[in-house]
Image (cartoon, rainbow over all chains, first blue to last red; front, side):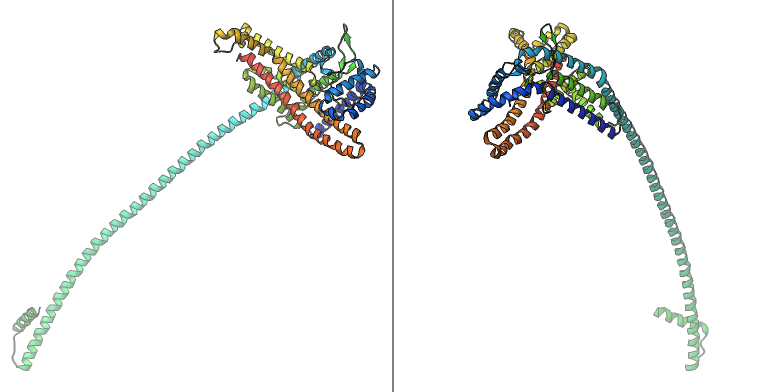
Length: 249
Length: 248
């Protein structure tokens, strides 16, 4: 429904209402008001100036009395005979008509509300409520589904993570093992190489020592021949050198 | 100038049956307008009932749900079939009160015989419902559970009197509120006219302004009372429904 159309409807009804108010004001009221107000103008006006102070306190009574008097004075036009002063509510002559029309209008209203107008309202509201309830149920289902999916993803992820962790640990261990193996091999190799080197050095040292002794022996021979002119046999020279070498270490 | 003039019953179309006056009056006219307005509101609001309501539809639905919730909260879930009745009572009184706030319009709820008639309709409806639902067991309503049987001769008459005075209290409350408020409005309006009449135009017009200001406040207050009294009437209807359905 367009809002413009609604606006037009509201406007139309307001116009109708305004016309009804005017009619309600003008129809019986106008006929009755004219003489009554003339009466008020004289009687009430005087009453006011005479007792302007006390009027406020007992306004209702004064006014009702004055009104009664005005009705008495005024010609029997309109509501003159309808009530004899006092509250219009307490005039039993109006009771039958009010009760009758109350019965008619309320019965009509109840019939219209219960059987014509309200069922559609109830239906619309209920359809909407069930739709909303259904949508909320569906949303709840979807939420649960999403949660299970999330949990599954989480499980898969954590599985993969632990798997990765395991393979990383495994690789590290492997590397460590290899390293240790290699280190051991190296140590063994190094030890063997050290050993061969040491024997080689020992041999070289002995050889060198032997050569030094030979050289020293020949030097001893040579010196003896030159200084003392004695020929010393090689074996004796060698023995002497060896003994000196032993003494000096 | 008479603040009670507004309550006078004036015939629009004179009807008399068997010498008794059944004229269509300004009071009957106001009742008919109330019915027409309520029905029009419901029909126009729901003319294009949509899943997402427009403005008029929202008004109708809020009104309905307000009454439905009131019935549910005060009369229990078993009172659901009687929502239309409470709805009719509530809207009839509400529109009667509010129409009375339209200047020049007749306030039919300011007449004791009308409110008494409405209260009688409510009490009759509730009592018949009680008898239909519970048969003669309905009379146990007059002896509260747990009361010693020896006290029954005292309690039962008291409870019966309180039950029978329900339509009186229900009707006098609404009638007195509406009549007092509307009389006040007219009395204060009368002060303005009196001030001009007594003091002349110069100080009189200034003095007349005071009651007008008071009347503005009183009108707002009267709107509140109009809605509140309709609500009270409907809530009490729900409570009586609850009594009839649950027997305390």
